[in-house]
Structures are given as structure tokens and as C-alpha cells.
Image 1 (cartoon, helix red, strand yellow):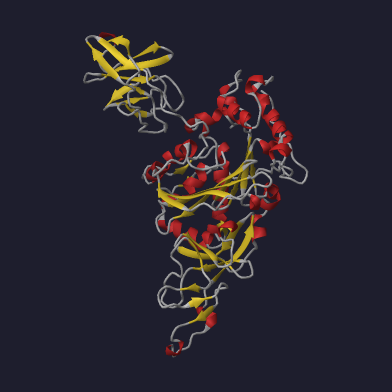
Image 2: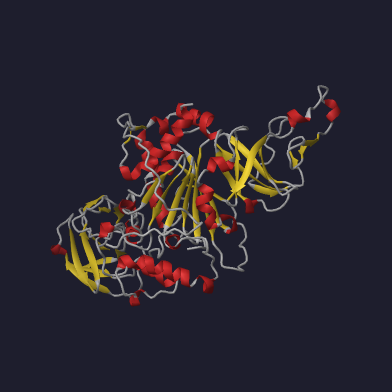
Length: 128
Length: 427
């Protein structure tokens, strides 16, 4: 996860009561699609609602052991780091820093991790 | 959709469709991937009978330059002689069995064993034995010189064949030189040379690159860049190819109305403005070819022997048993899949890249060879995606419930490779 940039404000995204524990809710916010995740054991996470594999929505994806499972092809992502931890995804997703103030869930809309422009390009090798 | 045109350059790479052999539909037994017994048969009857890539010629440019390379249980020493010829030897001193050279590359005036300093010249002849008079049985040179392996060159590669008899490299390669000489691989310097240890059988890797059935599943990005439906498969005596149209999205996506960014980036790279392109997305490929041809003089690249479709497409060749070539106008992305010395569940995956250079450009230095384990570093998105499943395929295949590969028509290059393999094994 990209370190929270101090100058990016936290924005209201949902009420804590809007999302049941173990459920997700997609909220469009400032040009992003934020998937608010109420963790089964409490607490909130937020990610950009786009699987890094086929760019599909992960709304309704199961939340298990700190990971979200993409409902389309089963890729798992770590909700702390955004890292893809199972096939078919390889690239990370965007995890937004979250804080809860009273009944408000707030997120910081940090920049997404960089994706390779050329999928064939091999780091450090010329010719692409 | 716009039909895929295949335009052949006179004297260049032929594009005619080869007749389709009838190969049936039988399951390919999984034992070929997991059985140590089958692995031994492969070694005795196939690996020791075929021509194999040893190295690039540019890795040993000067007299005395050498590289060592392994194939299965054998280590080989490839050396540039005083006559300019590359020679291959079994990398073993005939005194006490030490390897003559341990390092990957080097330069030597003679080939001296590091143990008792037996010394061989660059043709492999034993020329000096310290205290030779102490060998009262004598030291016959014909018996004790380095054992030579048949060696030849094509395409800027040094090839060797552990079989002392049999067909020439040219005969073995068959259609390959006539198809690929147009690219001039010998003039394309290598810019990457990496070996990765993979926990799968060598054929699992060969298979992974002999079909595009998986493309829309594990490389969804690439469906915006190439047509995985209208590709041509040609199965030859041993080798095979597919011609994959690039700079055109997959028909799986339907007709797109916007230029995908991945194609737009390629267009910009050759001076086209995607925003000003007037035509259907499916017509970009042809415009891309014409632009590349029209600007070749200006950019200094010589595409004189390549057909127009070779300016956009991947001419993907498989040279039996273990060379995979993704061939683009400006780049050869090559994989060599080598068997492990003893374990059918492990292999060595060699990735090298050769690039076309504009006229007058200085040749870049030969890259150092890197060796790593799977996952130690990224090989770029596409190869990272390809490698994810491989160890799991090997584990899955060991299951007593799994019988073998159930192959579709679009995967028939895999079946063809197995037919060729079994022609060797069944002898």
C-alpha cells in the first residue's frame, strides 16, 4: 500500500451502519469507485472497486481471513497491502487508508499503484 | 470485423497454410510429465539425438572465449577456436573426471583442468600432461583428448548435437532457415539472458507457450492487443508455428469503438496519432504496417525482407524440442526450456531477448547471464502471469485421479509436439 500522503484529506464515504459486517458496498467518490468493506470481526477497509485481473467489480466478493475474493475468477487480495495472493491476478489493487470517526467511515483517495504500460516489458531490459 | 490479411514478401517468410496432419484425440498420458522412467527415455532417445541451442555466437566472439551450459546431466563447454570456429566438448577432464571449466563464461589460451593441470588446446586435443612419464601405461591422445560434440551455427546461435552421427543441423531445422532467415537474427544483439528455475516439467513450459487458449483468461490485457481467434497454426515435420495478428483486438471483445490504450501506445511509438486515426479499430493493424514501412528509411530500421504483416504480428515458432520464439519485426523474445538433471518435476527456463538495431547503431555489450529461482524478481507482467500456474500444474499432475492432457483443437501444437517426441521415444 502506498503510504498515506499527509496532504490528501480524508473524505466521508459511508456510515458505519450502511454496510453489514462481512459485506461490501460500492460508493462513487470523486471519480473513484470505493468499495467499503465491513470486516467480519469489525473494522473497515476500503479498496478501489476494480480487480487487477480483468478490471471487474469486486462488489459482493467474500471477505475471508483479511482477504477479498473476486467474485468473477476467484483472485484473492490482501486487504492490508493490496497484494494479489492467488491466481489469476498478479498485480496489486488499490487499498485506501480508512479511519472511522463516530459513525462516519472516512477514506483517503491515494493514487493507485503504477501498472506497467507495456505488459511485455521486462524491468531493466531495453527493446520494448 | 475486418478480415485478417496475411501478406507475404517475395523471398521472405512463407505464409501458406501447411496441411493438417490427423493426430486423433487421445488423452496425452500424464506419466510423460511426472515419471522418472519416461524422463530417462527422453534423455536416452531424444535429448541425446537432437540439435540444441548452446549459446549466442556473440557470447564467444574472440579466440579462446568459452561458455559452459548444462543439458540434463551433462555439462558442455563451447569454445571459439583459433580458426574462428565454435566447438563443443563434454566438459570433463579425462584424467580424474573434474570439470574442465566451472565458470559460466571466460577466455583461455588453452583449456587447462584446475586439478592436475592437464591441458587441452582449443580444438580439445590433449597437449600437456605434467609428469607424463609417470603414467607407465602411456597417455594415448585419441582416448584422452576432450570428447567432441557435433557443433554448427544458424541464426547467430551455436547449436550442438550429442549424437555423433545422424542428420546435419540444416536437415534437422527443416523449414526453419527458409522461414526465418528474413529476420537476420545473427545481426540482432542479445540484450537479456536469464535462467529461472521452475518447479515443473520442461514440457509444461513448452506447452504454456504453444497455445493461446489461456490468453483471454490469464492475460486479459493482451486481448486488446492481439487476435487470439484468427491465428494460423502450421504443423511441420517436427516444428510448428502460429501467426498471431497484433495491433488488432480479439474478436472476443466484439467491435470496439475506441482505440485501446495498449494499441494507442504502440501507434504513438511509431509516430501515429491514435486520436487522428480515421477508420475502424480493426483497420489499425494495416495502417500500422504501412506506417512502419513508410518510416523505415527515416528510423533506420531495415525491414526489407519482411512481409507487411511481419511488421505488426508475432510469428511464433517452436523448434523441437525446446526452443520457443516470439518473433516481432524489432525483437526476438526467445525461451529455451531445459530439463532438470534428475527430477521430472523441475526445469530450467532460459529467457533471452535479441533486438533489431537501426543502421549504424553501436552494438550493445553482451548482457551478463542471470540465474534465479522462480519469483525472485519480476519478468514483466505477461511472463509473471504465465509462470503463476506452472508449479501447481506439476503438483496437480501427480494426483492419482488425473490421467492426462485433454487437448482442444486450438491447443493442437501441444499434441503435435508429443507426436514428434513419441517418434523419438518409440524407436
